[in-house]
Image (cartoon, rainbow, N blue to C red; front, side):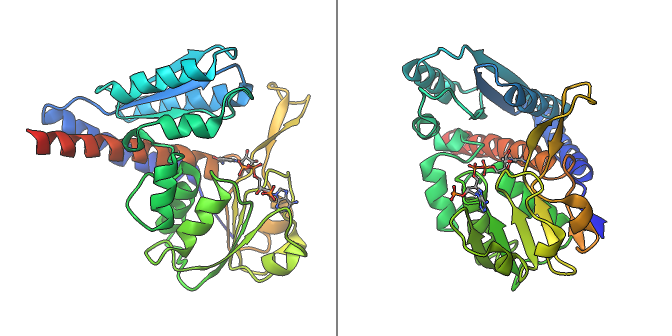
Length: 298
Ligand code: NAP
């Protein structure tokens, strides 16, 4: 069994991006700029956003967090989005989920300029993804494809079972795996809470992507020998023995599954870090898109 090491790949990607940033700066351009918008005080969101900011800074990006109170209205947030859309010094930005319940997340995502939508949640990017067109792809599934590529794991012709059909993970994952191009060409089964006898599907899978948010859901008896298992789940479980008061659990019962499979991602240290890596890559893509557009205008 080989661990798919998100930390190692994130480090590689940060180094590649740092070199690009230095080259652009040497040519007289400014550094890429990523902004994260955070509404409210959700503990997990604060952790994710500050990790994204630190990683951006470590590869030479300008990065900042815009923090707003939970009581902010949808209209006020839409105004802030419009300012970011118009700000030429901002290449890409994200609005961290979850948003307070009085704000429609999709309305917010759809207000983001599709060329600055580095989380890939805008409906225009979703539509392009389904057609296999160049677009911003949601960072978590994009990171999983990148991880598989960097470990030279072939997806073509494989049977991939994705558990979970959310807009941000499961469904885009199933689309990417089925696209007729590198990192795709798989036969994909998409399972969800209405799937009956889910185990009959996971037992046939060459690659299982568990993205349902149920700790230790995927057990050893649900995977075949030699399968590749990608654990997307991150759930905080109360644990008084930890300084933080919690531990993180994935959707895979690691000890049981790891002894059967050929490759597996750890939690933490797997997909979560690849999500950050993809966000950094998407920000570089937005920056280069803008550079290209500006040079066409000049
Ligand atoms: P979500 O929006 O809650 O979607 C969960 C999906 O799982 C739904 O499609 C649901 O089916 C399905 N599901 C729930 N219970 C199931 C069951 N018993 N059997 C089969 N399918 C079931 O969650 P999400 O945003 O996709 O996130 C999933 C997990 O990934 C969470 O733990 C989240 O924290 C984690 N996550 C991690 C990263 C990362 O960077 N590592 C990024 C994003 C999310 P229905 O559609 O039928 O309800």
